[in-house]
Image (cartoon, rainbow, N blue to C red; front, side, top):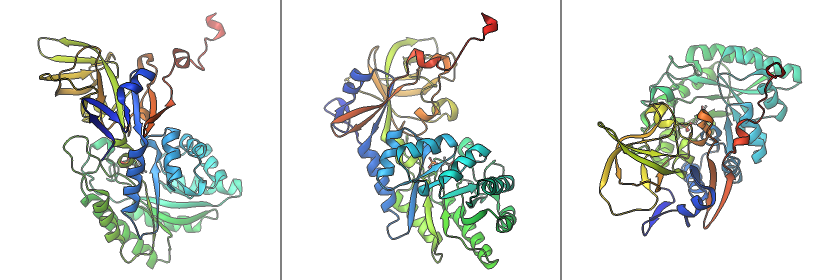
Length: 418
Ligand SMILES: *Cc1c(COP(=O)(O)O)cnc(C)c1O
């Protein structure tokens, strides 16, 4: 469910015509619907009604301060993977006690930052990290609250690049090593065992991988309990998929049922780390058609958004729906939708049956709210797109389009080059 709908022939975001936003900020631009974000958070959280839970939005899916603030105001926590995300999370107003920190490569300075702020929990991904955490905490006169991220070795059946819960992946600690890890953690003076964690991948469209992972995790908790360990939290990660095209992922209620069922009989507090499912369908990328062209082999629609704005199609061959912002009554067309970048991988859609659009018209790339702007780059010295948030009949530019000056900010020519 989202709030991007046609009224008459025009695409609206809530009560704002997409064309009005484009008149104000130009293209390409990202457009987020506050009502959709709110609804997604509510639906997700309410699916766990009756469970003690903290929904820690996974910041990396979309870190715009406005998006973070919205989830913060709704009582959410935050799942971060870097010092930069901690910085943003604090700026957006999240209390440190609602922040969990995941990631295989936490640097000492990032660990120190999080220790100083007093976050809820570090999700530790290696024994060496655990040791460093203890050292840094000792140096700072703190105690580091930890969970070990366990790799449950289940196949999430998603794209290999976003699968994280197999032993061949770099993430987490496998079950046997985790037992040793908890033994070590217990012996360390400046860490405190708070919980256990897993996260098996992203864009998961069935319940079974979640069930299997949790079954393994709960089995491990039982074993560890028998060894005298006790846990306050179980962090089940994120990964619930969304509908981009023809997927039919579990609804939050079904996902929640699978999790609640697996946790029956334990008294653990639940931490969830949803990212994509909260923001994915709450955003679109709006782009203008620059040219139409036809080669001997193919038809192309050249637009002003590119892989630097939305890399998912190039990176994962991901599918995004593409719709006209103003519907015209024309034949359909089969074409590649491509950007201006000098790479053949620079496409937003391949061999797509779509509305016949003409030069100067606008297209909406749907479901672009997650892993969209956050993965944008300045490749080919393209200023990053504007980001806009809509609420009802109002909209606000939550990040203006970058300027040419911003492109060279911080760069300098060394004196020896004169
Ligand atoms: C990316 C990530 C998430 C969120 O994943 P989604 O698929 O966007 O829900 C949650 N937890 C961790 C540790 C992550 O790295």
